[in-house]
Image 1 (tube, rainbow, N blue to C red):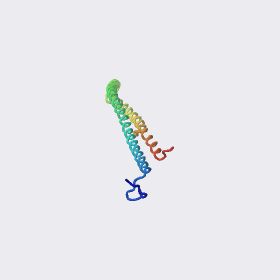
Image 2: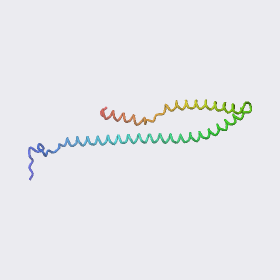
Image 3: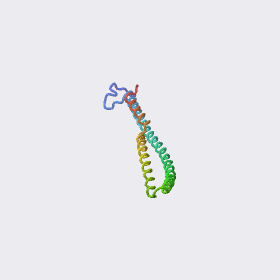
Image 4: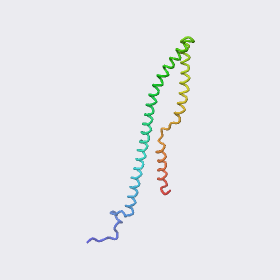
Length: 143
């Protein structure tokens, strides 16, 4: 028959109390949940960036096709303008006038493109916001 010693749990073979065990289990569960949460946030950020990159790639392909078609149209319109001007003035001057007009158009397009590029945000906005909310919750879980 086993006897229960009044000194049980006070020596070198002290058994952890039930409260200590449940507290460590709770802490372990919270840590695991936080790790899962942060892993999911990283996956969300990756998915968001992939989605944006895919959409940007498709748009870039369409811009490329439109750019080439537009280039061909403008090339032939420029040749027509140059040949039309060549009927009134020397061919060299006609080519120079058309080239200057294209230089002005290029400068305007460059400035507008640079202005629009400043509005592009490569940062995954939703993920940053949810990470801030998560960090706030971790600091103050009862709010």
